[in-house]
Amino acid sequence: MTKPPSLRERTRRAVHAEITATALRLFREHGFEATTVDQIAAAAGISRRSFFHYFASKEDLVMGDTVALGAAVRDALTARPADEAAWPAIRAAFLVLVPADDGDLAEQLALARIHHDAPSLRASLLEKHLRWQELLAPDIQRRLGLPATDTPDPRARAFVAAALAALDAAVDAWAASNGTADPVQVFDEAIAVLRA
Amino acid sequence: MTKPPSLRERTRRAVHAEITATALRLFREHGFEATTVDQIAAAAGISRRSFFHYFASKEDLVMGDTVALGAAVRDALTARPADEAAWPAIRAAFLVLVPADDGDLAEQLALARIHHDAPSLRASLLEKHLRWQELLAPDIQRRLGLPATDTPDPRARAFVAAALAALDAAVDAWAASNGTADPVQVFDEAIAVLRA
DNA sequence: TAGTAACTTGCACCGGGTGCAACATTCTGC
DNA sequence: GCAGAATGTTGCACCCGGTGCAAGTTACTA
Image: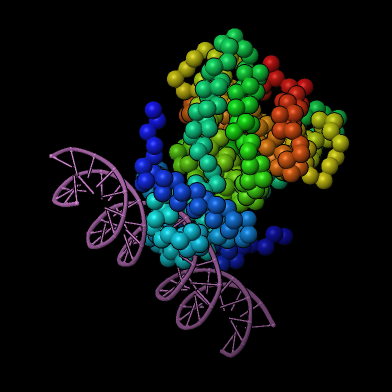
């Protein structure tokens, strides 16, 4: 009963995918910052203006749907048993990010490298994590035994930020090892060091 | 024996200070993003081009000398006893940031608020912390009992990132309370929650 | 098939930032 | 005090990312 996508929808998806593929290729070849939107548009066979019709910014090409991912993590977190402690709960919630990455592992690695090399992207990634922080803090605050407040308790925010920092370190280590390192293990070891 | 600053140096400092003061006033009145460099330059009585002679970017007006601060923290960290554990050592190192903030407390609060409200500044602040991370990680790695490596151990990086997250939460709480909350106490409580 | 909704494109514009060249100022050695 | 080097200021043209608008084209729908 799912209606087939219209021609418009199909072409839109196809163009979207081709812009992404073209851009990633250019990024790999020349770097993110050295590649201009005009070059991407020209290589993809569309006008510069149309590019901004498909992507709100150049960063959007490599940032993925951070809002949806953040919501997924939050949902996974709230779905954990109510009496589970903060650390195991957030660890389990982060696991929903791993399966989403399978499939084209090479592409994920390339993306991680682009993220790593462009300072503006690193900053953007961190800003995304700030949003996640606000999303996850309330649940964590409860799990830490802290009373609910309208604005998140700094302790809960610090806790979530620390967990995200461990997650970042794990992803970085994974990318640096060409995908051979186990990010979950790195994450667990980082947490262990924090609590030692 | 310190030679008096030349006329050039004095005028340079004076102009620098006046641009900063003018810009902060405009930022407080209209917000960081809504204030253009042209407006700042006009209000300060210099040309747009000269502005970029004094500041490499608009952000530089409110970011302070992050490199120097990071180096100060690192120096304070390496100056701690060699056998001190990681947590107390980094806590003590962060304390060098507090005395630097006294004097014009109102100005610091205004700065913190500007940082908080402009997304680009938040991202830039986080990027600055990434630099600090690289600076502090080697020492922390040793204090965590991890073997020295050419590229920092992810556990050490996660540790430093977590400490910086607690620092951020403390500063945020301090700013949110109009300077009444004690950031050191907030920091300690955040760390305690992490390790519980 | 006619009309409407959505897409594409060019254009003009904004704001941050840079390289360059001309001019003005201060500093330095004589 | 003066000549010349060093430093500072400014305008100009330009790059890049991003947006609003209007005109033309394409696909959907009644």
